[in-house]
Image (cartoon, rainbow, N blue to C red; front, side, top):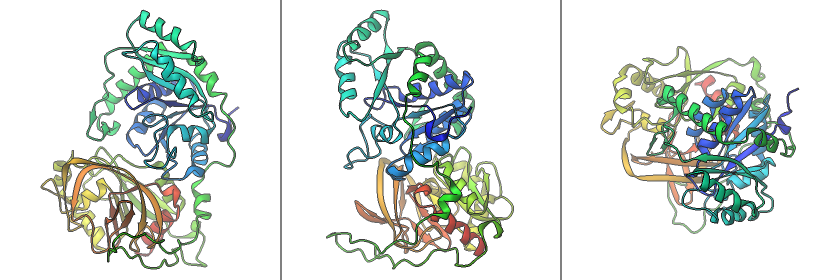
Length: 491
């Protein structure tokens, strides 16, 4: 008998800090449990797009993000239950150190916060290299810091020898936290990194499959899988229904209120959003099921592999036929394309190949020129520029893009500055930036977003184009998908 989504057994894999081995343990555990015949639901805390790709390889299911900043704490449980439908167990990989969340926001969006929202036990992965008895103080501190977080066990990583393991286990007896696994210090699993983290699965699928198999072998050999499954079964039952795209659209809130005061910062003449006007669809129109289907092309492949699964689900629920295409391989947009979504990824790595696909670049430019809706985030923004690192791109935007030494990283609180195919001016959304590129100029005559801290405008709204560095999660504002599809119908 299948578990209900609200009672699926679950574990959160956390660590004292980044680099402790969370991804190896979480991905290896997902793959090891899948090999046992369990249907495993994979999840990742935070905005990261790359780890969920490895989770998908491990489980054969869509990797999903749980982000209490982008979506709000109230959606963490429903989105988890949505992803976990029909599963036997769920594994949630944490982010950074267990208590590290959004800067200046306390516990918000930390692994510990999400574990509490999910009523899930935590398994702490500890890098045990260069310590023995001190590990007990470390584990005790993490287990006792927040009484609402239940650390149900520890997995010791990078253990040097039998003697080292013996010393660690002896020390941890006094901490009262059981050791559920010991992973020896071995040659690093082949998971190459780049300037924004691991290289995505889409760029190295064959070697990524081998890496996931190696992680599974490590975890199967070194961890007590039965004890981990038993711990997962101790998770509490979640209240509330699972998230559903159609229901989210039906209950999405009315247009936003006027923009709040931005404080004493010097006025910016471009940062004065119009008063909000009612969003599409028009009142009294036919039900969604009777409206004309529109085809929305979504960029995919190695250059544009960053997307949240809920975006396509919301577009489909709003009446779109979602068709994925690969700008590195396809020389034209899908036939009948009425709207285009280009998400994140690494176009800078493939600038020459993207530039060489001149036929597709011309089609994208012509579609944008026609006024059809085009939504571009980060990598999509770069692709729409005149050029990227000197290579010609689509030329939709009068801007150039280049690689930079500076990493731009962090959550953002933003407000729509201009009416666009995604939102009316005044719409508040939270987003995330993560890039090592610069676009000049950083905004157009009609900017996309006003970022509230640090105060600035960024992005471009031109004709039907909305292009920005900001990654957003549409589950937090389902009306974005509905508005986009309605504009596809009327453009």
